[in-house]
Image (cartoon, rainbow, N blue to C red; front, side, top):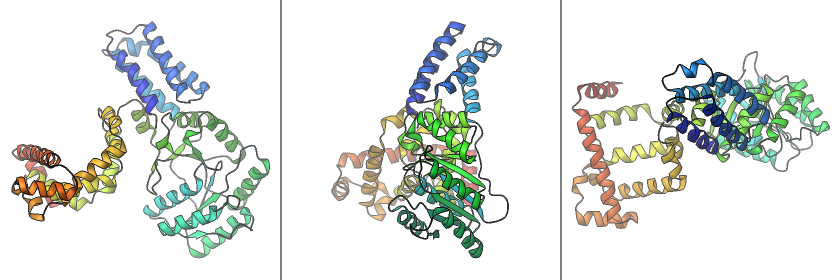
Length: 443
């Protein structure tokens, strides 16, 4: 998401940073390029106009002229105004007596059913007892899809088939939730056009009957400029409390995220970042702004690591690394842990300075390379993994044949591993690092 916009903004700022002093003309030229980049990213033209007016007012003022690095000062202003446009990240309102109702609305095909399951999974992982409600009686197989997702994730689904009116289904589901002590009810309503008065009246009736704490619009991030009209219309009819953007992993422009929040004033609460059930993350405007401006997103990377790595295993691996006892078995375990965090190029994009490298590595390339490394290590005996120095020429040929690779690839892996071991030995001679290893080992 935002790849195209990010690349163009980065080029503009790189040119600004090369200039020692910025004139008003320099700022105007740069902002014209920023304007084109934002419009090409499908950001609403009114949002672009207001955003650039705020940036220009500050960029030609004293805070840039007095700065020792004017180019960086402009980047800072753009970052701050981008944050103001994106607004604060919204948290779910789950206050009040149980069960709390969350109603999902949106156009057909926006991903509501999948999003309902992802949201339920996230809530359950945070200690809630959610129940899904199949209230989409119009789309063929919608009920079946939700039931299958519920079964896959072990989350209960309430349904009455396609003959009962959706408002009645939702009312009955609420009674069932009270009876069964579920504390969150997620209503998967049918997709509807914002201009379809009868369908909009139906979802208004659902809202009246269930009194939801949250009314969340599920919107496809690739909708582009039309996303603003969709969000505005739903907000006027239903009083939205939040937005969930889906398919953000497939949208290189990303203008919908900026536009919808700015026009409606409704906070973005979640981003669906992939097809897997756990590809669902809270919206952090500061992190997204940093990604847009090519500054990385280290906090999200850390959270992914914390969610994927076993703490005891990580501490054990750290101790072995710092004591120079890290072997190929440990290396293989680390690869498996990293794969749980998602595609390697996505992870690299979160590290400042690694964005271009992440672009050059497609998910297919990194996945293929990791599989080859795993195959090579798995083709070794346990003793060879623990003592790579045993791998003579004949053993390497056997490993290459068993893994479907070339001896050259086996040699390359061993060289990279030995380089890493050398680095670990150098670190182990540092008293501070030895202390850290001991501390982690005792946790």
